[in-house]
Structures are given as C-alpha cells and as structure tokens.
Image 1 (cartoon, rainbow, N blue to C red):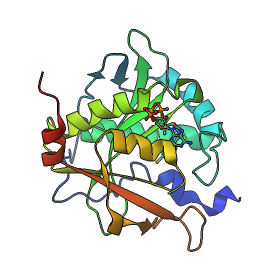
Image 2: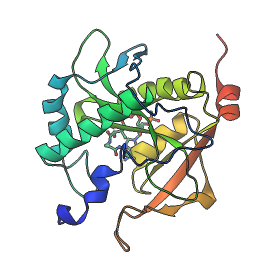
Image 3: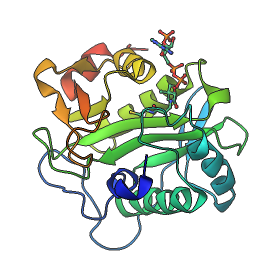
Image 4: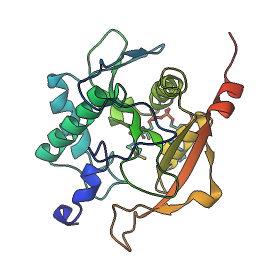
Length: 221
Ligand SMILES: CC(C)(COP(=O)(O)OP(=O)(O)OC[C@H]1O[C@@H](n2cnc3c(N)ncnc32)[C@H](O)[C@@H]1OP(=O)(O)O)[C@@H](O)C(=O)NCCC(=O)NCCS
C-alpha cells in the first residue's frame, strides 16, 4: 500500500483543526495546560518524555500492532505523530497519555481521550483510544488504562458522552470497549472520512458511553 496516498491516517490524531463545540471538553485557546498524571493499580498514564520516542517508533513499525491501519509508520511519521499527541495533551489538558507500569518509565504505549478531528454524524465528540506494544497485550492493561481515562473524562472534564470506534475486524479493541461499558450504536456505522472511497478499512463501528450509563455502572466503594 502506498502510504503517501494516505496522509490523512497519520493526521487523524490531534489535528489542530479538530472541531470543538457542544459536548466536548473545555479547551485552551492559548497557552499550555498542565498534563495530569492518572494512576491505576498497575499503570501510570503520564506526559510523554523525549526518550519515549524510540519505543513509540518500534510500536508504530510493528505490522501486527498496525494491522487495522493502512500501514505501519516510518520513524519520521511516528515522531510527527508523537508531536501531535503531545501538542494535544498540552493544549487541551487531556489526550493520549504515555502508559508505563507503576514505578517505571518504560513506555508500553498510549491510551487516552481525543477530540475527534474530523466531521461525522456523531461529532463533535471526544473519543477514547489505545495502542499498546505486543508484550503488554492480554493482561487487561488497555482496559485498566482506558477506565482511568474515561473516569477523567466524565469527572475532571465534565463530558456528557464518550465515543470509541474501530474497524469491525478489530475484536480486541471492540472487546475493550465492551468491557468499559460502551455499547455499539447499531445505526452509527460510518465510513471513515479520512480514508479513500472503497478502502477496505473505511467502514467503522461506533460505540458510545453516556455519563449516565457510566455513573450507573460504577461500583460504589
Ligand atoms: C487493542 C489493544 C490495545 C488491547 O490491549 P490489551 O491490553 O490486550 O487489552 P485488554 O487485555 O484490556 O482486553 C483485550 C480483550 O480482547 C480480547 N481479545 C484479544 N484478542 C481477541 C480476538 N482475536 N477476538 C476476540 N477477543 C479478543 C481479550 O481476550 C480481552 O478480553 P477479555 O479480558 O474478556 O479476555 C491491543 O490489542 C493493541 O494495542 N492493538 C493494536 C492497536 C489497535 O488496534 N488499537 C485500537 C485501534 S481502534
């Protein structure tokens, strides 16, 4: 696949032209916001460090990690994406956090919240997403990290709803959505507007989680 024909895909995260508006978190029109750190039982969701970039390059170069995207990323593309992710975090005060094991700075991947940077029937919206290195899969890490990000969205950011979406074949990701309490919006399937007409990955399934449903499903300590 000719990656040069698909520049959109590597820019769909954290586009500076991401729409805001009703239902999204308050942004910062100027100046950087502090990047909060979220902790879970086993993980830390933190601001990025410059020395995360080599591990992020390896993550994005892994064909298995990227099997539901048009292609793996080159080192330059990965660095550019990291720049956009970090800019979103400091601009908005939320974004795709770098994920490490508790007590370590090892880079396992990224998990977090993003303003959906394209227009679709369900936008404006904030989405939750994840990308972890293979060695971290199968231990519940994506769900654990995303649960903290979702809670941050519904409490600190005061969001009323979160969305998540992926290609139909991405069963692990869909399973994470379900475990987080998201439900599939059967009428919400959409063709990703940043993929060309007819692209095999164009069709996406949409999942939603309202604040009310999230609050009702929370375990009271
Ligand atoms: C999606 C991803 C983050 C999941 O990470 P993870 O830490 O392994 O996720 P979790 O362990 O929290 O949950 C994964 C769930 O998917 C299930 N699963 C894994 N492979 C599956 C498959 N082929 N079919 C069905 N379910 C599957 C797991 O069993 C687990 O569910 P369970 O807890 O009920 O057993 C990881 O696979 C990844 O980084 N993938 C590549 C990037 C990507 O696709 N990102 C999402 C783009 S929308």
